[in-house]
Image 1 (cartoon, rainbow, N blue to C red):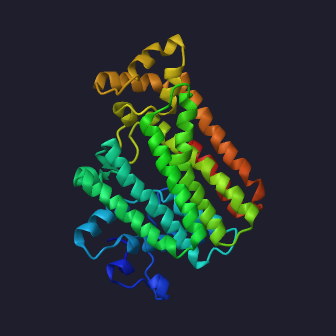
Image 2 (image 1 turned 90 degrees about the vertical axis):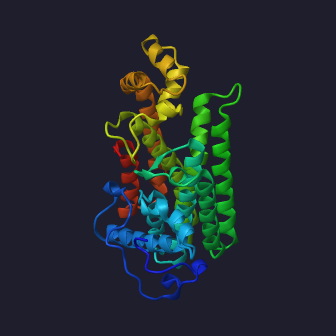
Length: 358
């Protein structure tokens, strides 16, 4: 497995990071989120920290059983943005970034995220994830579900060494993840505004774990309590913004993102924010759009028409404005963060989530 020079304690091998032995830094960290990261000393520190996270991740997903090893490492090997551990590492720069718990806490958050992806792909009947066949399509739904459970178990094993408060925070985060998924599955209830419901789901499903990543990084580095509070709120809002930008990219991207064809959500009948605005509106200019997106758009000609209408719609413009509002709210949380490279990087992340194209 790429980047792993060891197996995990659970797999019967030694963990050099815990034993203080040498390890080999991967040639390049797996993150693809780089454009907003700073240069210079801070950039080098984050790159080094991410390399440690990557090595720890590889050790944490390893198993003495060959098939479990392959399945658990499947999505990790496909790479990814490593958004959550990067945010944890950046938040830790406001305290003792070298505190040993920081990397483990970052890994807990990424393992939790990876585990949810295995489960999400089963629920969504997805065939592709990060440009590679999803675990459920490569093997079976049962394998994908059990592999997600395996990663949750490994995250819990690391979490146990971080103390009871970390366990409590993670448990409450996991509760929100599950609640958000349940709310998304059953949909808005009678009398509930569909847009408010959707944004609440995003806060639970995405924002909560991003918030915990920032919280863990700052708290385990010993940052001041007011910084931990501010960064936790920052993480939730920038996490929602990040998911909103993902959904918009699915519409506006010509080449697709993460191996997905443009308009995948439309084909699957997933009502993201622009579609919800269209469905709730009464603009005569969007009457045809509302007709098309009332359900899954599987016909190729109708899909192309819906995508073209959505790209030029006021509903897309409204959704883009909401994305900007979340990014601005996140940036406003940074008043508690001292001026300097860390604050600049966090502010740069707010700009990145609005302007990114992949």
